[in-house]
Each structure stands twice: as C-alpha cells, then as structure tokens.
Amino acid sequence: MAVLSRRGRPVDWRPVGVNALETNALKVVRSADNRSVIAGPGAGKTELLAQRAAYLLQTGFAPAPRRILAISFKRDAATNLAARVRQRCHRNHAERFDSMTFDAFAKGLIDRFGQALPERWRPRPDYEIMFPGGRDCREFLSRQVGAPPASIGTHADIEAISAKAFERRHLVGSLQALADIDRQALAGVVIDNRQGAKPTAIEQCVSHKVHAPYLVDGRCVPLRLPQTSRLVSPRPMMA
Image (cartoon, rainbow, N blue to C red; front, side, top):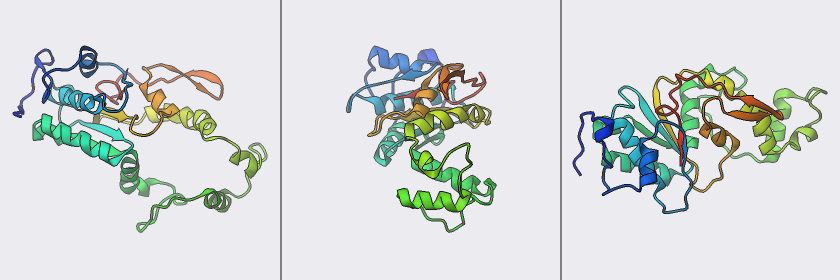
C-alpha cells in the first residue's frame, strides 16, 4: 500500500490498509481523550491501535521528535502491532513508534538508568534475570532490611498482604510522584491489556481521566496529573 511521508490534516485523514472502520472504532481512533476498548479475541483491537498510531503520526498530533510507546503483555502481540504500523505509515513516521512488552520496557529502564539507583538496589553489569519463589523473596528481604519495624508488623504480617491490597495501598499511592516526571519525549502511550492478562489497578488508573478520584488507603484521592502531560495524545488509550 502507498503511504505518504508528509503530514495531513486530521479532517482529511482516512484509515490506512482497510476499506473502512466501524463508526465507534473511528471515533476512538480520532479521539482526544481517554478511551477503553473492551472486546473479545479477533475483534480487531490490534488493528484499532495500529490505526490510532497512524492517525497520531500522520496528522501531526505526534510531531517529531516525539514518539509513541505501545506496551503489550506478549511478545507476539507487540511484534504484530509494530508490523502493522510499519505497513500503514511511512518509515519516517513508523520509526517513532516503539512497541514492546512490559518486561522489555522495564528491562530497558534498568539498563539505561540503573546506575542512578541507590547502591544497595543497583544491579551489577552482569546481572541475570531470575524468577524467584516465595522463599527467595523472604531471604532477600531478610538480608536487605532485617526485621520490620513494630509499626509494620512481623514478616508473617507482610506476607499476608495480598498483591491487590499492596497495589492499592502503596503502588497507586505513588502515581502522584510519577505524574511529575517529564514525559515530553512521548506523544502517546497505548496499552494492550487484553493479551492474556487481567487489567490491574494501575492500568485502570491510567485509563481514568485527569483529576479522576482513586482510593488510596481507603480514601478517595484525586490524581492531579498535569494538563500538559503527554502520556497519550493527549491522554492514554487502552485496548
């Protein structure tokens, strides 16, 4: 298919590589706010994300040197989405689209910025990725922090905290600090959270609008994301 390198007007943009998009899908592709797309396997979510990326890149909503980050849970999903964007966009546009898994994205952060971590958490240059069990985690925590403070409880109390409770009380409460991080290099983020995994509170929180309330330690706390943030053009979209 022929793709153009020049930027077009949003009003003139048409889906690339397909005859047409369903009406609601086209609204999502052209949207300027949060959208959560829920559909079963084979419904066309990946194609919708590819069209969304093409729209942002080809109409100037994601101008150079800004990039778009797409995150999936599975490698084949990330590879498939990247291939579709390359087919639908000129290489000058497609080269600013990064599609990877959560694991690859996290490892990239460690490889690039690991030396900025406190020494006790800093990985060695020859670090290895492991899949520790419960015993490994307990031994690691015992070596690093010793006995927990009385205000927190015992090791057994900590181990009794469920993953969901830890996420709600501690991780989500840290989003305000993350909101202050400079995101000028990214014009967009799309999250494919239906590739074999359930959405977590973090993903649900990302899909909320600016100033959306969220429960932190049982209290309703507004997430004060700055209006100038460029998580997505201008806000994130999930599918």
